Length: 259
Image (cartoon, rainbow, N blue to C red; front, side, top):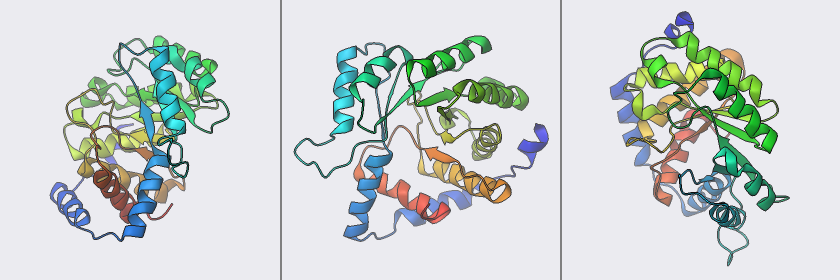
């Protein structure tokens, strides 16, 4: 497993920052902006992950996800509603027939610091309850101390427990400390079977950043070149405005093309 991580290569930190700064200055035509905003909504996971979440709050979030603007039916629905496992059945019922998926966090979210058998059991129960997607978190402690095999094997096991559900692997890039680590974790997660890699839980001070996201996009590009498999990516947390969403899509387009 160490060899796999070693083959991931290093990241030119200065080059990443300079490329992001350049892409942020791109001039975008109005038509392209409208297309990008429509796409951003279609790819969005509306999320509530709070200790005070209720069935009523989840139903309201589902209604918003299906009709982001009730006064404008041309606005598309979001990709998914992301919630805790105990509320999956509520969301599944509210979203029936809408095309909006149900995503559930699992594996000891947000820390990932619980027993391996509990992580697997939580994943299986979430899928049995109706989750279309599972958002797991890697054990950052294990990763940062170099126990890459443990992280890899855990992702493989969770992927197997997902059955037909898609697996999104949250790296928590704000805790990985370096661009090199973000790239290594990205390659590791993809090799272990992740359908998507995701930046953040939204529960630590540093969430998605454009430079960190570029590093992940480049890892996806390089993994695809080597394996022929394309993996999805979800930036999460900290994207507050339409302008910021468009900047992320520009970085995506310039790195991976119009996939």
